[in-house]
Image (cartoon, rainbow, N blue to C red):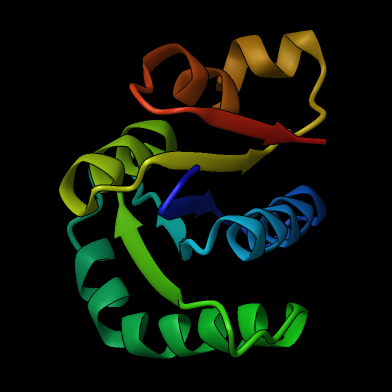
Length: 137
């Protein structure tokens, strides 16, 4: 059974369902949950890191509030983090750095063309993860 569940979270409906699934799993397993939101900066933008530094604390507080309102459960330890990078790679790096042993992500529901053009975080994570992955629809 998992002890540390990572949830990739982007405020979408499928991410919300993935978070609720992770809470149910954590409740059954006695695990803790890390909710991780990944932000990407536009290539070539010199000001983007400065903008993120200026409002990073506010964005993290908003994310904590949003997650806390979804399903408050004082019996489950829930951490919230924001990381930078390509979503799939950033989530996998978080797993390695923090020892998560299960990943839960939402399925975007994009069509084949959109997935081909923009990629899919769930497909990327499934292809590269060394821990179990659950994709929630």
